[in-house]
Amino acid sequence: MSVMRKQEAAREHSQVAQQTHATYASVLWCSCLAMLAVGANGTAIMAALPSMADKLSLTQAGVEWAVNAYLVVSAATIVLGGQAADRFGAPQASIVGLAVFTLASCIIGFANTPSVLLAGRALQGLGAALAVPSTLAAVGTGATLEKRTAAMAAWTGFLMLGFSIGPLVGGALTHFIGWRVIFWANAIVMSGAIAGMALGLLRGGKVLSPSRRLDRPTDWPGFILLAIFMVALVFALHALPHMNTAPLSALGPFALAVGAFSLLIKVEARVVAPLVDRSLFLSRGFAMGVGIGSLSMFSILSLLLYFNLYAQSREGLGFTALQAGASLLPLSAALLVLSLSASAVAKKIGVRTAITGGMALVVIASATTGVAVAGGSIVVLAAGLFLMGAGLALPYGLAPRLALASIAPGQAGQGSGIVNACTFLGGSAGIAAGAAAFAVGGFLAVLGMIALAGMTGAMLGRGMVATA
Image 1: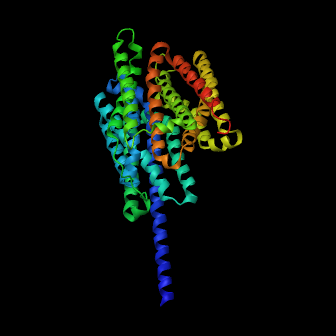
Image 2: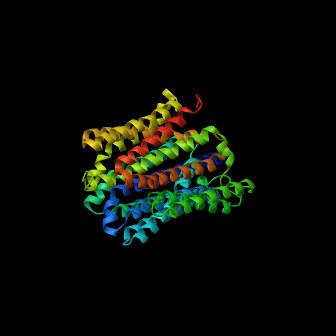
Image 3: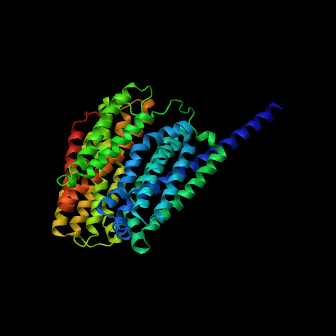
C-alpha cells in the first residue's frame, strides 16, 4: 500500500510539474509577445507621424505631444506599476496593463481629432507603465533560478526586437494601408497576449504570483509631486522655442517643476515607505546608470522623431513613410544586435570602456550623419545611422544593469521603477529639447544636440570606477 501511495504521489507531482511548466511557458511567451508590441509601438509611430499630422491637422506641438503624452504618463506612473505587481500579483497586474494598452490602441485607431489622439496616447502610457514592470515580474518570479536569466533575456530581446523593427513596420503599414493599422495591429497582438496570460493564470496562477505581496501603503503625495515635476519640466522644455515672445510659457512651468521637486525631496524624507528612496542615488553606480540610460533614450527618440520629420518633408529628403522607415534599417540592425550582445562585449572590454566608447561613437555618428545630410549622400547617411545604432546600443543595454547591480537585492523593485521612470523622462526631454533645436536649425541642430548628449555620456562613463 505504501508503494502504491508513493507511486500515486509521484504521478501527481509529475502532473503538477508539467502543468506548472505549461503555465509558465504560456505566461512567458505571452509576456514576450506583449513586449514585442510595446517596443514596436514606441517607434512605429515615428514613421507614421507626418501622415498622422496631415490627416488629423496636428500642429508641430501636437506632433511632439503625440510622442510625449505616452512618455510622460509612463514616466510618472511606472513606479506605481511595479508596486501594483507586488500588491496584486504580477500576472493580474499584467492583464490589467495589457487591457488598458489595448483599449488605448483602439481609441487611437478611431481618433479623428488631435485631442482624442493625445488622450489615447496618454492612456497607452498608463497601460505600458503597468504592463512593463508586471510582465517582467511575472517572468522573473515564475522561473526557476536556473532558467530565470534566459527568461528575462527573452523578455528583453522581444522588447528590443519590437523597438528596432518599429520604424520599418510603421513606415510600411502607413505607406501601404494607413497609419491607423499600426494601432489596430497593436490591439490584436495585445488581445492574444491577454488571452494567453488569462489562460495561464486560470491554469496555475499561484506559481506565478510573488511569494510575498506588498503590504505597505502607497505614497500618494510622492506620486502626485513626482508627476507634477515631470509634466511641468516637459512643458517648460516645449516652451523654450517661444522664450523671446512668451517667456512666461517656459518660466512658469519651470518654476513649478523646481517647486514640486523641492517639495518632493522634503516629503520623501518624512514618509515611512517613500515612492523614491533617495538613498539609491547615494550609490555612484546607480546614479551613473540612471544618467547614462536617460541620455541614451534622450538621443534615440529625438533622432527617430526628427529624422522622420526631416526625411519625409519636401525641404528634406522627400521620402515616403516606407522609405524613411527603410533608411533607418542600419540603425535598427546595429541597435538590436549590439544591445543584445552588450553583456558579452562588456565582459571582454569592461563596462566602463563599453559605455564610454559607445557614447563617444554617438558623437562620431552625429558628425557623420550631419555630413550626409549636408551633402545629400545616402551611403554616408546609412553609415552614420549604423554608427549611431552601434554607439547607443551599448549604453542603452548596459546602463540599467549597471544601476541595478549597484544596489541591494531588496531594493531591486523600486530601483527598476526609478530606472524606467528616468529613462522615459529622458526620452520625453529629448523630444521636447529636440523641438527647440529643430525649430532653430533643423535636423542638423538636432544632431548637434545628440552629439552633446554623447559627450556628456562619455564623460559620465569615464567617471565610473575602473572595476565597474
